[in-house]
Amino acid sequence: MSTNSFSALLKQRQFLRFWFARLVGIMANQMLMLAVAWHVYDMTSSAWDLGLVGLFQFIPALLMTLPAGHVADRVHRGRLFAVCMLAQAAVALVLVWGIEGGFASRELIFALSVVLGVARAFQMPAQQAITPTLVPGHLLQPAVALSSSGVQVAIIGGPALGGLLYVLGPTTVYLTCAVLLSLAFVLTWWVVMPHTKVAHTAATWRTVMAGVMFVCERQILLGAMALDLFAVLLGGATALLPIYARDILHVGPEGLGLLRGAPAVGALVVSLILARWPMQRHVGHRLLLAVGVFGLATVVFGLSESFWLSMLALAVTGAADNISVVTRLTLMQMETPDDMRGRVAAVNGIFIGASNQLGEFESGATAAWLGPVGSVVFGGIGTMVVAVLWLRLFPQLAHRDRMT
Image 1 (cartoon, one colour):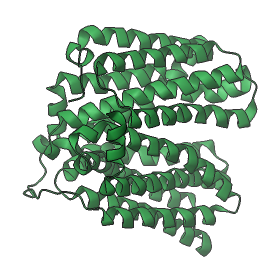
Image 2 (spheres, helix red, strand yellow):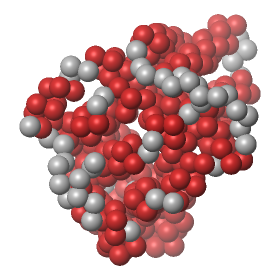
Image 3 (tube, one colour):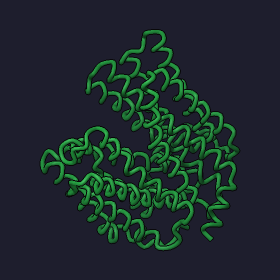
């Protein structure tokens, strides 16, 4: 039955076209972010400037996420996603122009980083809301899993390809990004997807915040999003990987690159498994179990002094986290009517952004207090405690049997 579902998914031509467009676009985006950061650091040799690049992308993305969700529920989502691809391609071309014209400065990169942040704010709710419109309901879970596998491929391959091309100079990377993003634009524009025209009413506080109210009124959605928030907030060890690579595992920058890629490898393997054999029963318990395994693997990584055991533990965290991601996104799409999916996806984006940013701060703060090992172990134990607490706090989520 599950194999037949996977075979049926591979016959969904519009979904596969968008899947490829999304893969190409996210890979190019990863390459572009790497090249921009490397470029500004080569230019200024300032860690402060390097941090500002991320800040100038994060702040507009955070501020625009809820309005972007409103827009995604009012306009053609495919066109919106395509325009976001085109905007990022334009950023890459401006950087090429700046290099060739001799006016590529830190100020120009900061300004273009703001454009990237705004484009990503509108891209995220649009791309999440598109997939459910391209496949029938019974294929949604394998579709989400296959989409997740594409994202993991992009996260692994984008920075690696960008780093190799940067050897030839930043212009080569930016031109490649422009070509790939333009390809994503064309492919997305070519996708035939349903679109219901809605009245173009002015955005109000009530319409923009409707996604927040919708999530707060539904225990399953609130529990799933909050679970991911606290799991990543407590259990994420990414910010401390340089300390582990240099001072604990003694593997240098080469080992750091492998450590950073290990979770994505685990996530990719599990997403491919879930695409072919989707979960049929006890999805709530399996979600909480996956979060518990994520916390346990984090503890193992924190205590490990073996590079290969650490790699394995990080791969397990990526695999467990991907089970959580696929389950959470599938439930979110199942529980949300189409005219609200953009705004609900925007709320989910805020939860994800907050967990990543605050998680890095939490790791650094507790590491200063408990040391890096104590910080990671404390976070892993905290994640396991959260998984147990959610059994009582969100019983509808915990005892959810099927996706539908």
